[in-house]
Image (cartoon, rainbow, N blue to C red; front, side):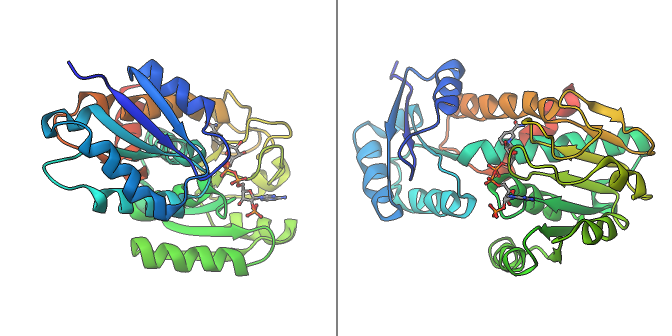
Length: 299
Ligand SMILES: NC(=O)c1ccc[n+]([C@@H]2O[C@H](COP(=O)([O-])OP(=O)(O)OC[C@H]3O[C@@H](n4cnc5c(N)ncnc54)[C@H](OP(=O)(O)O)[C@@H]3O)[C@@H](O)[C@H]2O)c1
């Protein structure tokens, strides 16, 4: 049997130890880091991987892209895919800063809570995403928009940077996402007055909304926060909360660790999917959401 070998590429100085552990636990025999990799180096590395083994051993090799930039990771996936020379192949996956699997798990948890608590579908909601210039928020916004939700991405520093993210989402994924100005508490309170869902993916240790603000959001059904570092992103939602009632509201909250469990299961599951594959896999946040949704629904 050929060894299962994972080549882990990052544009950064280090690959993520989290990802290394996940890959070895999922069953890879070997994980090799490649650091400070640039986009124009990806094709040569991929071809070195695929030509070293006979085509029927292709799926025993895999390339994993890390980093902390969703768009660059997606560009690296596309470059790797285009560098394959059938029948020579390998598996390809990205999860920069754990963002693809975290965003997938967060949206899947919210989807389940919406259905169970109020019989509401994602597509029938308006969602405010905080932290959408970051990797997790960016992917969560795109997944929710692809599922048909009306998505607002909130810019804490004004509308300009989130507008350029919204334009990029339209160009790359053909989704319409509204950029809104969240540069003051008053503006954020006005934004959440009109939403059924809040996704909070801001920087670790940053409080995005107070409990009083959540209490004022009369349409709110579900709020999720992925920041596990105090102060938490959404006051009143504990890290362990798993569709727990938010005090003084009709809404339920999902905390960072309730999502984190499924984030880890999803990353492990995608790595395992590559090991078990008979045909080359190319896995991004859309595949992560498909798997996270299945895992969340199975409980
Ligand atoms: N629970 C889990 O399983 C899990 C897994 C991975 C990550 N996380 C958490 O998910 C969150 C997002 O991660 P990430 O990798 O996407 O982080 P990131 O790339 O640092 O992005 C964080 C976002 O927060 C924004 N931000 C910075 N300061 C802010 C402020 N004062 N108010 C509001 N927003 C602010 C950033 O804006 P700028 O563009 O200006 O920087 C960016 O949009 C973090 O809290 C991280 O710890 C959780």
